[in-house]
Length: 199
Image (cartoon, rainbow, N blue to C red; front, side, top):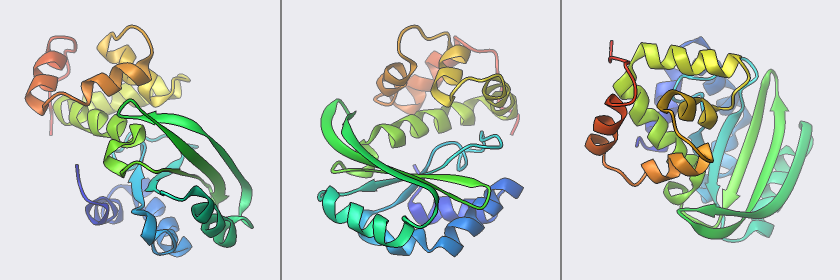
């Protein structure tokens, strides 16, 4: 997967919504403020399957959630629709406490998710990794189909599961695929979808 700098560069030179997301992230100074927590842009915007109302997702590594909360509260608690909540989740099947903070900047809902796990072992990152690899295989037709399903009310992971014909919990099923190599994933996905890469 790309580095944070590469993802941000792609947003800066991307489509209209990606460029606007980059502008909002730059003006908010979010990546400088959270620099100590290795912030990484995740979710649907970097991989170009977002629709109006989609979140800008930022994944962070925070070994001390109390300290992380203080930083987020100090800089963002005055933002519209600000909320923070804690819980226990999984990343690579490892239980880990998390903090999820959300707020609004202009037309963009932002969601900052932090765990003590490295970013590349967190579920949000792993989901995006699989989704990106599949979109590289499927091309424009795959992007269009995922967006169509999202417009119809499906969340992102259930939309991918629907295209692939996956049974069970779509979030768990996509995590299983994250352990596969690109060749294994593409070979398997070709047998389940008719999309052709048109890039």
